[in-house]
Amino acid sequence: MSKVQDDNYWRDVLTPAEFHVCREGGTEEPFTGEYWNVYEDGLYRCRCCGEVLFDSDRKFDAHCGWPSFDAVARPGAVKERPDNSLGMLRTEVVCANCGSHLGHVFPDGPTETGLRYCINSLSIKLDIEAKRKKVAQGGKH
Ligand SMILES: [Zn+2]
Image 1: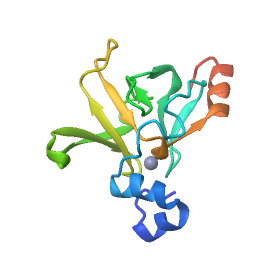
Image 2 (image 1 turned 135 degrees about the vertical axis):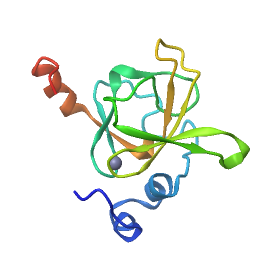
Image 3 (image 1 turned 90 degrees about the vertical axis):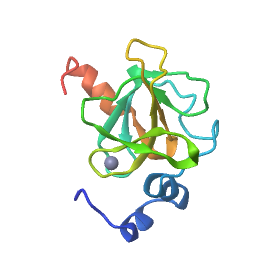
Image 4 (image 1 turned 45 degrees about the horizontal axis):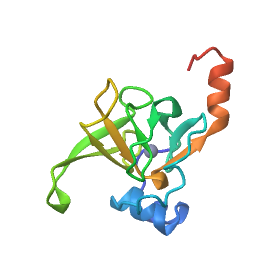
């Protein structure tokens, strides 16, 4: 898939809620998303382009109502950029492949990485099969 798609394309393939979060930088309501309390083994892919972004191994309960991870699945999977909206200085994270808005990363994570990736369920899609295959292959990508 081509990396750069215009809004007309995304309006066709995404639901209005997905479009708002992924392409307009929206935020889903806490405790309403599909994955905030899901801890099944799997790989979380970008909802828009399918790139693997997060691994369930790094998911933890941040009690915030959004899926939270302490690391990305591989270096370079996401891009960070400053976000000064809402009068707060935050760091937005977007899919490095397609530019889709994912959520924000905060430097207050409880694990050794010190990071808390706070991600919208609407921005990601859990792929259970991919993780099974990865394990079957001895963890190789
Ligand atoms: Zn993407």
